[in-house]
Image (cartoon, rainbow, N blue to C red; front, side, top):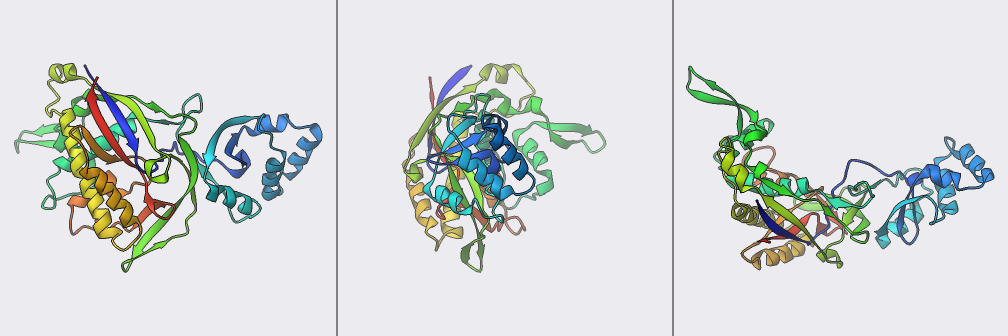
Length: 354
C-alpha cells in the first residue's frame, strides 16, 4: 500500500451538497447564518410565545419567519453556524417579509458532528472523469450518451457481459466493479473547519446569440472559501494506492498509476480552461478569471495538477463532451457563477509520497 499526501488549494468556491434544503423558518441570519432546531427553539420560549407561534403556523408563513427572527437567541437550539456574504445578509433582511421569495438555502454535506466535509468519493470521481476523458478516442468515435457506462467500462477494461460464441465477440452490458482499476485507489474524506465555508449567492447565466445574460434564478449555496474570493483555503488528505490488490486481482486488466492521474487531470483541466475562456466567456468579465486559472495551470510543477469538483461545474466538466462534435450535447448554454464572475469548483492538487 502506497500512501500519498494529497494537498488541495481551493481556487474557486466548491459546493458539495447532500440534496437537503433549509427553509427560512429553520434558520436565522444575524452576524452569521444560524441553522436552528425548530423544536428546541420553541420549547425554549415562554408558553405564551409558543401559543402565539402555534397560531401563526399554517396561517401566515411570513409572520412565522418574522417571529423566529425576532425571538431568536443564539444560545438556544443552534445546530451549526456559517459565515455569510454581505450580499446574502442584506438580501435576507429585505426579503424575509416577501411571500414570493422562498429564501431556501442549500447546505454543504455534513457529518454526524454537523461539520462540513469533502467526501473522498467526490475527489475520486473528479479524477476518474479526467482519466476517462483522456482515454476516450475523440470526435471520430461514435458516442451514445445513454450508454456512457458501457463506454467507460470499455476504456477501463472492466466490462460486465458475456461472450457471443457465434460472433466471437464480447457483449458489454455495463461496468463490473470487481474489475475496475479505480478499486486500487481510495481517498480519505476531508473534514473542514467551521470557518471554511460561507453562504453566498450563485447566479445562473445563459448564452444566446453571443450574449451572456443572467437567468434570475435564485440559488443560495453554502460553498467553501477560496483563493479567488479573497479567503484562501488549503486542505490536506491522503490518497491510498493499493498496488497489492493490482498484483493479486488478475481481473483488473487496466493499470492506473498516480502519474496517469496527474497527467490526465492536467490535460482535461487545460481543455476546460481553454474552452471556457475562448469559446464561452470570450467577451465576458469571467474571461479574466479563466486567464488567471490558465496562469495557475502554466505554473504547475511535476506533481501538481488542476481539476473541477462539486456542484455547478457543468456538463463539460463531468463528461467527454468536449471531445465530441456535431452532437446536440456539445453546445451547453448555461453556467453557474459566484458574484456574477467566478466559476465554481476549481481546485489545484498536489500528490507526493509520504
